[in-house]
Image (tube, rainbow, N blue to C red; front, side, top):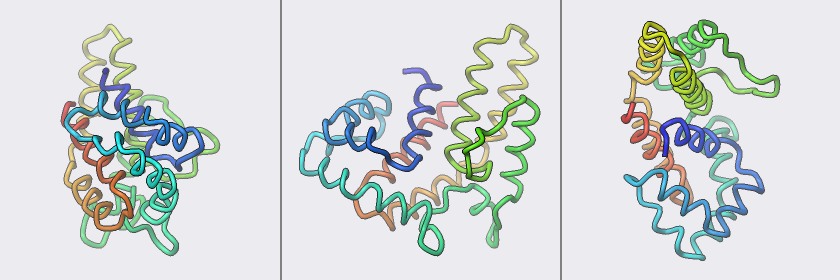
Length: 189
C-alpha cells in the first residue's frame, strides 16, 4: 500500500466516527484493512466479534473524551499542545503548517473547524504533498516538497506523548493503536 493511502486512512480514522466506520468495525473489514495497511501494529483483536461490538459501542465515547473533551480533551490532537511545557494552541507548529499550506496553495474546506496543526490536517497535508511530488517533474520542486514534509514531521516526540495520553484515557484499545500506526507510518518518510 502506498504511503499516501496509509496517511489518508489515518486521517479518516482521526475524524469523528460515523456510521460507515462503525459498520466497517462490525463486519470486520476495518480490521482486515488495518492489518494490511499497518503490518507493524497488531489488529488481531478485530477477529473477535465481541471486541468489534464493544468497539462499535465505545468508539464515539472514546473519540469525544480523548480528542474533544467535556472541558478539555484527554489527548489533545494538536501538535501545539505538546510544543513546550506551557504550550498554547496556534504556537509554532500551527504557524509552520499555515506557512507550508500557503506556500503550496492549500486551503481547508469551508466546513473544516479544527486548527491547522490537528493530527488530521497534518496527515492530509503530508498526503497532498506526497501526491504533488509524484506529479511534478522538476527535481527542485521534489526537493522543496521533501524539505517541507521533513519540517512537518521533524518533531515525532509529540506523537509519542499523544499516544501515551490516548492509552491512559481510552476505554477500549483502538486509538492508541492508530497513534502507533501513525508513528510507524511517519517514520517511513
